Amino acid sequence: MKIRNRLNPSNPCFSFEFFPPKTDEGTANLLKTLEDLAPLEPGFVSVTYGAGGSTRDRTVELVTRIKRETGIEAMAHITCVGHTPDELREVLRRLAEAKVDNVLVLRGDPPQGQKSFEPVAGGFRHASELVRFIREEDFNFSLGGACYPEGHVETASRDDDLRHLKEKVDAGLDFVITQLFFDNAFYFDFVERARRIGINVPIVPGIMPITNYEQVQRFTRMCGATVPMRLGLQLERVKDQPDALVQLGVAHATVQCMELLSRGVPGIHFYTLNKSPATRMIVSALRART
Ligand code: FAD
Image (cartoon, rainbow, N blue to C red; front, top):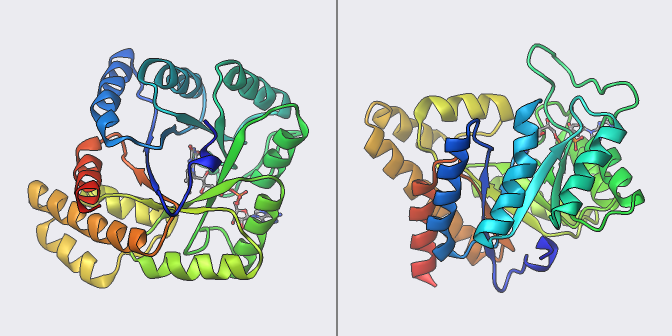
């Protein structure tokens, strides 16, 4: 099933993002988690692409197994990091062979220790180049990409970033998924600006339920997402009370999702960080409301 056909504001879909576990036991646990999530009828799940080596093979394996063993639609992420075009073609060929229909095309972050992104010799510098490459090759994927309501961390200005997004979409994206945000105003403003410059593909909001204080600090530092002052103060107050922190994180994300749904988003993508109970609580609450 092509995800582009599943993104519909009159019947929005929920999707869940996971990273590939490092061990076979971890993979078995994740597949079990997915069975538990199946009753929530996710539109699709997606599996991230790591920085190198065996974790990358695990992305392809996991997506293949999710499709085969759970019947849930699964999308593979892929990045330009450390890959030549020939290597990328081979990964894509394996995905196509496994009947994977959807790929999230990313540039990837600079590897640890490097300040800026440098492609390998002959490799791609921007995600848009990889999108163009996939479209020129004989693949038939539905393609998604990343976008940044608050601007990508490396960009000089949000307008520049948006222009680059337009280039990437024009290269052949069917939909985009946003970086996480905690204040919906960033998303609504971003969608409005994107539409104004002719970006017409579905823009799926990405939501991360906060479940860990240090983790949210680390993530927001890395990706530049703003924690609204009131939420920041509330988190500070419960940072040493794990249960209260999860409750706060779930409550905040649920309220965010309710507003997003009421304003007609085509879907909501949850960054689960492989901790699905928080996401399950939110989606159950959202389903109960409809
Ligand atoms: P690009 O679209 O190439 O943009 C990167 C930067 O380059 C931006 O600042 C952009 O403005 C600029 N740029 C683009 N085109 C041009 C141009 N022509 N000239 C000048 N500047 C330009 N990372 C992983 O490693 N694995 C994953 O699985 C993964 N999954 C993700 C899923 C989602 C939904 C999101 C939002 C992010 C994900 N990331 C993942 C993180 C992502 O790889 C990083 O944010 C990365 O830094 C940028 O990737 P991109 O695809 O947005 O890059």
